[in-house]
Length: 328
Image 1 (tube, rainbow, N blue to C red):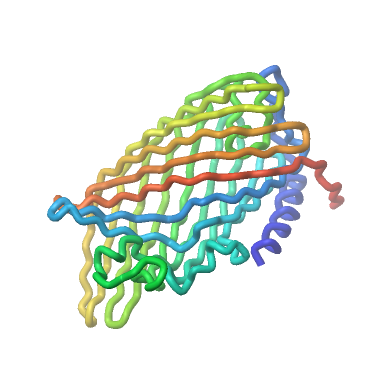
Image 2: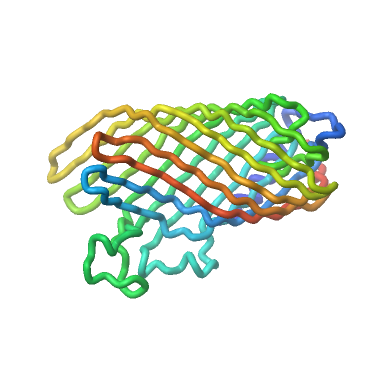
């Protein structure tokens, strides 16, 4: 079903771009080469999993939950100034089949991106359902790893609707080369790229006689810096670092034995993203590998710090080809 959605997206993107007739084109230069007349199709697989850590200052204990998706597959399409990607956790990868021990998790992700001059606008919808307690041994004395099931929260669901707005200061630098591979960086360059992130999230859990829903809105400003070092005509190495600060507005609704309680809180949040990439680019073929990290934390109260940390690798391969001729 996900593959079918991807091919439907190809037709919609190409048709929409032709209808509105607004190609955003970057003139080729000694620094960058654009492929606005090409369709770029790419597949990448990563090891990113959604992980939450609740650390208590009172007794130094940590409660860790993780989704059971060791590998995630993304299919993406870019044409002219529009891009779309569809992500899911494939069942055919063996590491995603240990449901007996860790429970079943589902993952769905849709992203859209629009390139308008030096501006980049992103849209995202993401949903993850099913988590397990990674440090179950801290709570069950007789528990044996690899034999006994982890503590599981199959009804715990995290949903995100997000947007981002970025501005690229240096016109010689190709942000699209290292993030979406829709351009080709021909000569080394870097740029400051401030980005405003704003997203609405819902974390919900249902069990017998108990339900909990947390609604929270995040807004943060990141001062990102990217640099691409061209090692050879076709090979490049890139790195990035992105410190950010933000505010989290939270509304927590709990229902226990038909008794409803509501709590509203605001938090100051801190973020640090970054990564390195080794890639290959040509007129038709692109491939590469990344290592990325994402560190997010905020103080929930005087005794608890919530951390959402991610460290993951990524492999991608793609192909550029001429867009099909569509007559209207």
